[in-house]
Image 1: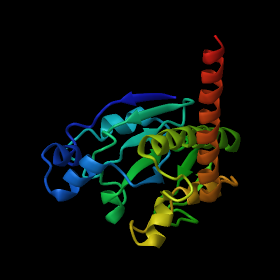
Image 2: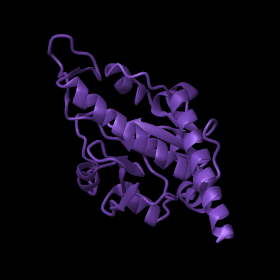
Image 3: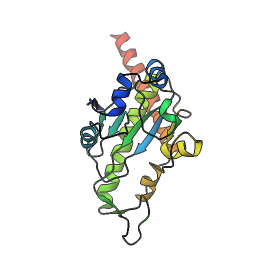
Image 4: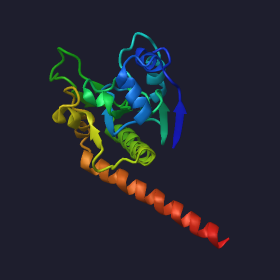
Length: 220
């Protein structure tokens, strides 16, 4: 996995953290996250770099910690330090959770108001094979990144990970449906329970690999 740091230093949320504008920023910086929230960007833009560049502006009053690229395997743009409080979910989870966005395929198109069949968040698929490949690529990178962050902050992947949609139902985030609606729109069988289980499995696999490497190191 390739994590590229490109901090959005001109963004108002980044500046609020640098200035430690109130106790919420201080607490997050001192204690780190107690949970991780998975998002999906809600537009047909697969490039994490595009978001990282665009959000580095005082015009944006929103911020996440990282974008997961849908074009390249394992590519992540980290735009906020992990211990900064981000404005990613419109609720109290901003005070407790890291926010990670998965980019979405350019092989879909969101309908605009007034178009036949329009409803909020509805998209049409332009090339299903390529759209699914992009979604799967971002999903698998998300699994690896979340496993890394769970290990870093000693989080339980089965208890401490939620989606924006789940955060809404828990009363800690605004009324969004991501990323589940994106997966459903592509007829993927991904679920958050499956995602959490995959993160747990990834953590165990990495630990097993590390143990095996240590075993052979001892033999030498």
